[in-house]
Each structure stands twice: as structure tokens, then as C-alpha cells.
Length: 408
Image (cartoon, rainbow, N blue to C red; front, side, top):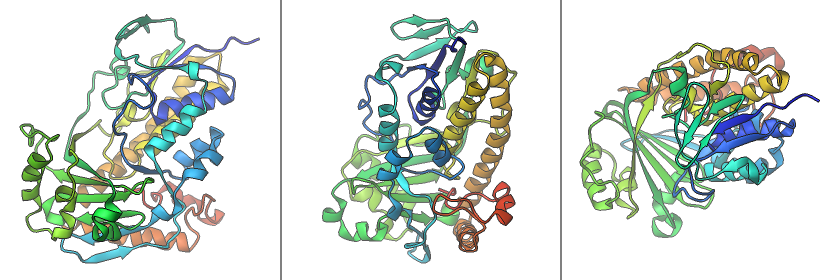
């Protein structure tokens, strides 16, 4: 009987859990070290996700949890409105079927967690550092003896430090997140404006991109992406809603008041996050017993909607490489990284270009033209729809065109 590899995964996010689940399906156990104290320890995990056909959806199918996912996928949430800051509507895709339903990040994580044996996950195990020999220095213990250590712990990965000294740098954009509860009752006009899907308001020369999403529990979550210096707002108490309003409102002084409600219509704190990225095309020398997936390998901004899709695609590629070479982990790592680097670089380039053009003086025209083009391709059968491949004679287009709504 072949000896099964001893694999450690750092981080119980979508990428780490997807990797563990696919390997579990093939009889390969893993140990997941997660810094959270429990499954419900986080106050927020972000908003909705739309999984692409060749990314998250493919990984979900390979993980054997498609039925569970499909029960919670919100197909009505595909609707998208594109509006400028003065209220002019450029696009309303309500009723258009993209094959990209939304699912709340919390629900996706729950499905993945429930698909794994509970003993796989070690909660409250915060990784502090990794030695080159594979020793894991955790907050309360030390672990070693692994055939493979996979860093799936995001932007500030400790495992990545073993592979490369390169660190993420500031993208020039900060995002401000706000949650509205009971919005249908308290602010019906705002709720109607958002609808069941997403509302994009583009500020063009202001360097602001505002995205508002309906959540599965009927709440609404808004993200304001603002191009500003890294140090801006460092003296603001973002947990104080009044202080947050006073700091943010001047950025929207010529916006239609209906779009400033994300600041004025809630007493919830504002979550401010600087967006950091890794250099496009970052690579490193192979190391036999280490690799990284998801944001740890190629963190990018959300402007192409590729974060979780790229992460779950990495998980699938690494799992398949290990399944094909369970007794030769170094070769499995090499095979995976060569694929991941190529795809990751492409997605990083797309994301960077999309961010720059969206926040440019004619960002809304760019998004409108791109979306109209992609929706036209779906109508003509040239792109995937309803979870099925496009007409085979157009399959080559998928190599050059992003999936519909990966803009977001």
C-alpha cells in the first residue's frame, strides 16, 4: 500500500478548504491550521461571490458539493445596474442570464467546512513563522514532519516568506465597506435602487468606484473603492460611524445624494481596507515541500472578480497534481506551479488593467462597452451560460475573453 503524503494547509478559507475537500474525495487526508478560534469567530467575511465556470464552479463540481452549492446559489442576484455618479443609467441587466449566480461567502465556507471531517481542522492555531526545514511555529505549539506545506493564508502569507522575500505593495486604492440591515423597511428607495443583484456607480475622473450588493439575508453591503494615498485616513476612527461619515462625505461632494446613502443611511461601523497586490507574474525557485495558493500566490484587487475564482482554481490544479503524483510531491508541486504561474499572471494583468481603466476619467464608458460586448457574446452562444460550455466552434474565445461579470 502506498504511503499517503502528510500535508499541512495553512488557512481555512475557500482555497484551503477546497484543496482539502478534493484531496479528501481521493482518500488523501490533510491537516488545516486556522487562526480563527472557531467557524463563527469572524464578525464579517465579506459579501457575495459569483463563481466562474472555469474557476469556482469547476472546483465545486470536482469537490463533489455541487448540489449543496446550487441550493444556495442566488440566480436572481445576477442582475446588474451600471450608473454614473449623477444618476444616468448606462446598463440594466435585470433578467439577463449570465450563468454566474451569487453565493454569500459565509455560506460557501460553511458548505466546504461541513464537507470535511471535523478532525481535519485545528482552530485557534495561528501560524507565526515557518522554518526552511518545514517546522511550523504556531501561537501555542510547534508542528513538523510534513511532506508538503501549503500556504493558503492570504495576502500576508507566512509560507510565502520561505519561497520569496517579495512582499505585497499598496495598489493605490482603499475600499470602504458598510453593511445595511433591515434596508427594505428602513430605506425602501435605496433597496429598490439596488434591486436583487448589484449596483455599480462609477465616478469617472473622481477615481471612485462604488459597488452595492444584495446579500442572501436581504441586507445590503456597499463597497466604495477610492484612489487615494496609502496614509490617508490613518487618523480616522472607522469604528465611529460619525467620524467615518465626516471623513468620507467630502469625496462625494458632487455625487447624487442617492449614492451617498452608503455613508449616511447606517449607524454601522465602516470597514476600511487598503488593497495590496503582488507584482504581476511573480515567480520563485521551486522548493520541494512548500507551495502557495490563492492570494498568498497572486493577491490582486477585486476589479476582475478573480480573487476567489483564482484561489479555487489553484486548489483544483494542486489537488489534481497531488492525486496524479502522491508519491512524488516535489514533482506534483512543480507541475502545479507551472500551471498556476501562467494563469495567475494572465489574471493579474487583466485585473490591473481593469482597475486602471475603471478608475479612469471614462471608466463608465469602458465598463459599458465591455459588458455590452460580453453580453452579446453570450446571446450568440460564444460564451458560457447556465453552467454549460459555449458552442464548441467558439471555444477559442475563452482563451482571450474574460467571463461575463468577472469585472466585478
